[in-house]
Amino acid sequence: MSFKIIVDSCCDLTPAMLREACFTSVPLTIRVGGDVFVDDSTFDQSGLLWRMKESATAPSTACPSPAQFVDAMDCGADDIYVVTLSALLSGSHNCAAQARMMFLEDHPEKRVHIFNSCSASAGEVLIALKIRELAMSGMDFNAVVSGVSRYINEQQTLFVLEDLDNLRKNGRLSALQAIVTGTLKIKLLMGATPEGEIFKRGQALSVKQAMGKMLSIMAQDEHHKGRILCIAHCNCLERAFHLKEQALKSCQFSDIIICETGGISTVYANDGGIVVAY
Image 1: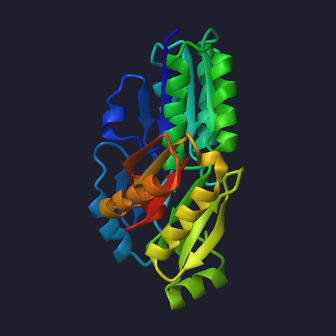
Image 2: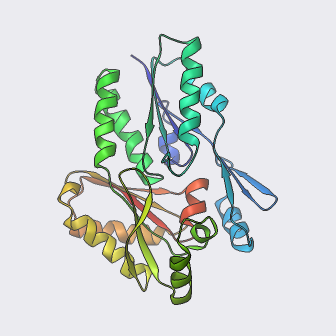
C-alpha cells in the first residue's frame, strides 16, 4: 500500500527530508504588524526575527484551512498519516480533523489518521520519522497508528529559550514569571506535559546553565536509551552542535539529528532558542 505523511509547518523537517516523496508540509502563516510570513519554502527567518524584535505586539499565527489539508490528502496514496502540533497550542489539529471528514466523504476507500503530536518542532519531526519507519517496514495502517500512538505517549519534549518575549506577549507565561524572568534575566527550562501543554521544568541564570539542566534530565531518564534525539535550533547552530557533543558524552541515544526551526517554531523559540525531543 502507498502512504503519505502530511505535517503542518511546525514540524521542522530538514530540507532533505522534505524532498522525500512521502512527506508533504502544509503551511501555517504568521502576522507581525502589517507583515505576513508564509511558513513554507519562501520563509525568511532573519526577516521574521527582526520584525518580531521591532514589534511591541505579539505575532499572531493562523493554522491551515481544512481545504489546504484536503488538497494535501488528495495525493493518490492509500494510507494517509497527518501530524499536527499540540492541539492545546493551535487549531491546526482541529482543521486537519475537519479535513479528514471532508476527504473521506469523497474517498471512503482511503485510510486517514490525524496524530496530535502533543508537542511541536523537534517532537513532530520524530513522530513523522517514526511513521515513515513503520510504514516502510510493511506494517498495515492500524499497526502503524498503534505504534506511533505509543511513541507519542512516551515522547519527551524540552526547550530552553534565550528570549521569552514572545511567550510573554502571547500570555504563555504567568504575569509573575514574566516579571521575574524579565527583571532578573532568568532562563527557564520548559517542557511539555503528556497532553501537550507548556510547563516549567527548571530555571537558571544563563542559557548554558539551563542547557546543562536539560542534559542532566535527559541523562537521568532511563527511557532515552536507544532513542533518537532531535535538536531544533533557532538561529544558533553552534549552540545546537555543542548540545549534541555533550549529549553524545552523557547520554545513550541511538542517533542525534539537528534541524532548523521554521516559521512557527521561530515565533515561539525566538532567536537563540533550542527545542529537543526524544
